Length: 430
Image (cartoon, rainbow, N blue to C red; front, top):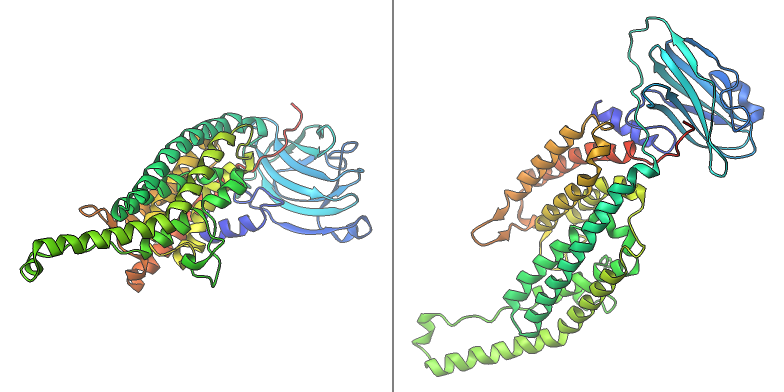
């Protein structure tokens, strides 16, 4: 499927299995307007699922689905053998009609009618015959809530372990701040913040604790002066506003006594330590408390929702495109590329427990992996191993920025398919 087809498919994902359907949503109307809706009339609902259709020729098909029941319906067309879903129409209102178009090969199919507050029902199986050899609508295996149990449990257990590591990293950061060790504190900040960024799919489950640990910057307000800012961005602003104590160069020592040079260095260090203890220690102490509280409460019973697993697989790097590359998360350290590198790893960590589900559902999974690797290789080209430093995004040339944005955008095109094929659906009757 090409770039444009995937983009159009995502626009229909609320009502169709976007990215895997070749058909299109045509229109919706009330019962009085149903006569103007294109397609073979088909009744759907718990009492009349699939009424009006019993089969026909393989190839292009258009159905006008009318909900004649007293409940909002979700309607699917399913291959009875493979169990693949070819249409997934959500939220079909009472008395409403919706037109869907698709193309199916010869085989046996059925309509599934799923109401939120009622038992699922199915039409009798119907047959399509003939030797149609044209393009058909690809189907997708439905992902039900039960399919996500192992993946969510695996990811939640992994997150719990990572939170323990995060607590240790924040303790190291706090100790460096208290000791007035600015270089060590900056190094510890990068380690701890990267550890937090790795927990990408769990953000939605963190609630207020997550907001306190890594809040968004307030537009138009200097992070260092923002009295409401907490957590990592506040620490970043404080740590990178401070200046390390300058070492006295040998040439300068010849112009002052060794004693005077040592005394000057000590005074500068005392000022730096006082600054950090006054401005950074309270922030680091609160951060440590927030991380400890989150570690105690996460997974008891808070977990990522089923739908979060698929959504976060592209939303993590979508945030990088929308926020990191626009400088909205830069509180002074200019660690944009460092953060994106961590977010790529976070994306892989989300996908890892989903691979069993994706293997039979996402035909582009290998291509997605290849684009993730390509993106990370380009980002890592700006990592200077000898000094463990990163080129600030602001120093990239226009051509380098365009290449990074294009590579990230193309990677997101493939990642977005994961959310579509793993959109949890209600299981139909056996």
